[in-house]
Image (cartoon, rainbow, N blue to C red; front, top):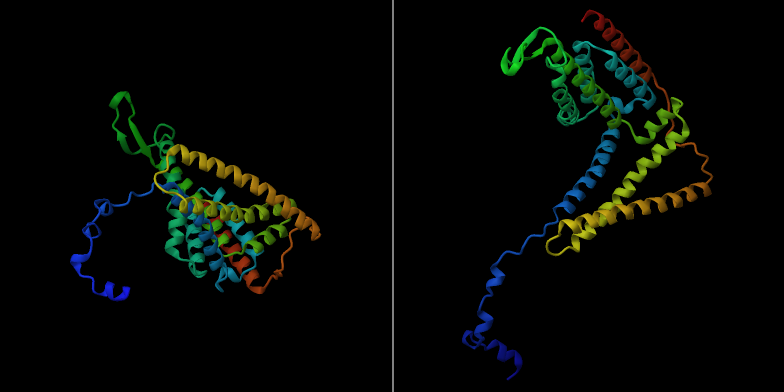
Length: 314
């Protein structure tokens, strides 16, 4: 009888009992690896690339602000930023916030994400941290509402918020929100090469632009190196990682990235010098000032003049 027929004729009672028994250790769940800091670090580094992809995606859309020259947008938005910095009227600051929001909608940006990124963090923090300065401890005035009634805990006048104090706190929050709105709007609707080209047109020193371009590109190169190191560490980790091991790994990683960036910078500079780099940034995109740019600048000049008049009225 062949071995195949013997295997085919095996009966259940012919199988050894130890093969049918289950190991109680197999039913126990495998202990999870405590590598949370590695996965969190990978996610945070991945957000850098995600934000860059979002910016490039919006900047490539054929919408309102994307079709304008970067020099025109930069000059107009700088004028809006200066107006918001010197304005003390809540009406004017609110109008500037509305203008930025309308431009974001016309440019095809996700208005929910725009409001969340601009107004959901920094302006709220500025408002919260400026509230102590808006109280009667710093800003005096007619009480609007009391936190502590007069005579409580030795406070003769009590602790209260005045209209002037709350107005100052809201003004600070609006200024920060307006500044973020126009900055965020410009970066989302402008390619990086066009942005540095606009700065060059405003006679920003070439050395500063070269450092800015190299820092921008190094950010992604070093981030890619860091995420590769984190993924390799995560795939080779078995069991629990102690706090001391985590600190040593992060210290070695930071040192390696520093040395890697230093060596890479020398190699890149030598390659640029071999290709006759003169220190002046060069772009292949030709900048043209169109009629739409002139109309955009003219319309926003009228808006700024109207808001300056409104500053005197309100």
